[in-house]
Image (cartoon, rainbow, N blue to C red; front, top):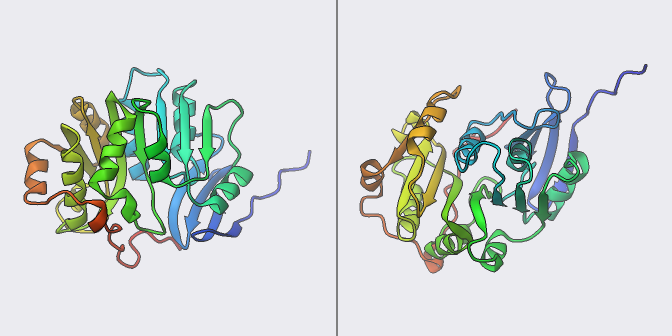
Length: 284
């Protein structure tokens, strides 16, 4: 029997730059997606529960704690990448209904062509603008909203305002959870503003990040959580502490101290997240 050919890298110009799919030499059907050199997603088609990026593992922990094990969820994913988390949720919570919104049509075409989704997985992809789709979505229709939207390496300004936070709250069910991947460094001007935005709309907030990021020692990812119902902070703290790169879950007084005098950011003043320093998220 002939052996399967070795996978080869795929490079394509997409709407937001140059996308590359790079095969993992250690895992036969695993791929790293980069856009303009910045890593966007990692997917193992044979093992969708394998999550390579630490921030993705933290978002997966949120999904794991959103309901009893195996219970289906209704989830809106803002930002698609290689559809890592939707694949994970389809594998761990069958019959979940998932809508994935990705504005980069070229990227979405590349991913769905080269890394096809399983049949009857419950995942629907939409090549549209995240804010537009969110504002048009039915009220009280989602258990979880996952926001992982980056134009290049920055969160677009239209997804950084208090009006955007209100749009997310309208779509979530009363016990639903908003989870966003953000990036910043001390003195956390952007992150503090995001926390202030969501604090005006949601009663319960939490932040998951590595201690070195929280202490201001380096630029890095932070997962922001917001809900009108109490968040499972103890369970999330146990899960994130056990990861290969342990993280802390900040909430309550610690977050109020971080927000301090930060004020909500309205659409008129909203700006994109900060430019990462050289090398912060690049790969060779």
